[in-house]
Length: 104
Ligand SMILES: C[C@H](O)[C@H](O)[C@H]1CNC2=NC(N)=NC(=O)C2=N1
Image: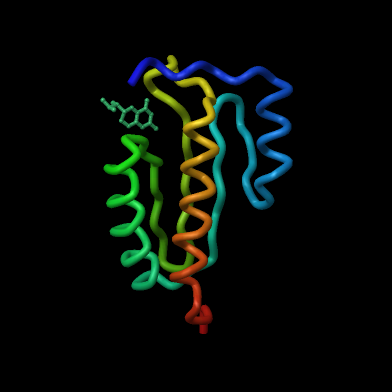
């Protein structure tokens, strides 16, 4: 696998438009999910498994009632690449499957 190519501004904006809930800060995208702590722990295990398979990892910040995922591509000099948006979509699907329990 080669070094991933950074995306252009137009490509980043187009990718973000297809990912509701994700925000961009510079060359990082992030999303905060409301989710119960224990459900989030289970989601994180699945996210870790997926990350190993695709060799791309998010920064994950677990709090009592929410989980925040932040993604950039270290190998591209901390720039946004297609791998970041692919991972974001995978995390959306995984968290959605674990959000079934209401917050209270
Ligand atoms: C060798 C290994 O594939 C690389 O270090 C991968 C692992 N996971 C990664 N995750 C992220 N978010 N960015 C990377 O550049 C990256 N690189």
